[in-house]
Structures are given as structure tokens and as C-alpha cells.
Length: 193
Image (cartoon, rainbow, N blue to C red; front, side, top):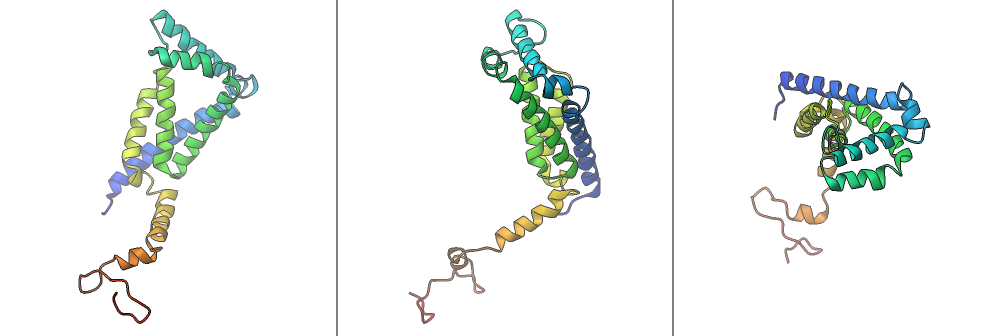
């Protein structure tokens, strides 16, 4: 199928924009203004975020986890493990941004971003997350076009070519011959069994 340049430009712009947003969010947590709360203070930002989600859930108003099972997860798992989770979030956001900007495994990077957005929304934060989630869904659905002008456009055709060129004997035997029939196995003399 042919790709229209206008489609490629649209998905390139969406991919680069969302990639920049993720890259910047991760950068701020790794080296920027949010570094102290994420990287150096045993995940204080993540612990506070989880505690706010739990508190909002129990209060029943304002921001907070809407589901009791999610509030329990925040309280019982995220709060005590906030240190390493904060580092994972920072690295994950940065990696998602790089992958989207480079157009490298675009569909997977957008899926990872969507999952992070869902986690944030489950925890009671709307902000930009619904908008980013919608953009991620569209990038997932259009991953071939979205990554065409990027590393996906360079790597995926090579990977596809390599996998289709490596047929084993059973695939060759079951492939149609020039007369439209199917190759039958033969003995050592070339005679069909």
C-alpha cells in the first residue's frame, strides 16, 4: 500500500510532539527541577503522589484513586517501594520520549506511554494525561505510518525481509509450484513418495 505524504507528516508531528513531552518529563525527573523528589529523595514525589491518591479515594471527593483496589495497590505496594518506582518512572518517561522522537518501535513506545497515562489517571490525576492517552492510542493504531520517517521505516522492512527469506524445508514443500500444485516430498532420486 502506498502512503500519502500528508498522512506521514501528520503522524510525524504527533509522534515528535508526544515524544518531546515524554522526554521533557523524564529529563526533569532525571536531571531537572524534579530530580530531588524523584531521583535523590527516595522517591518522595511518588510516595506523596500515591498518598494523595489514597487520601482522595477515602475522602470520596477531589483527586484520588476511583477504585478501592487501586487505592490498596497504591498504599500497599507503591508507597513502600516509592524509591525504585520513582527511578523506573523517570527512566521510563525518558526512554518513551527518545523512542518516539527516533521513531524506534513506535507502537510499543506509544503503548508504554499509554500504560503510564492510565496509571496516572487511575491514581486520580487528569491534567494532560487523557490528551496524551488519546494521542498514544492514535499512534498505536497508525504505528506503521507514525514510524515510517524514523528508525521503524529503516529497520522494520529489513526485519520483515529477513523473516520471509528464512523459510524452512516444510514451508518450501508446502509452497505452490509453477503449475499451481503443491510440491510433494520426494525420495533421494527426486521421485514423489
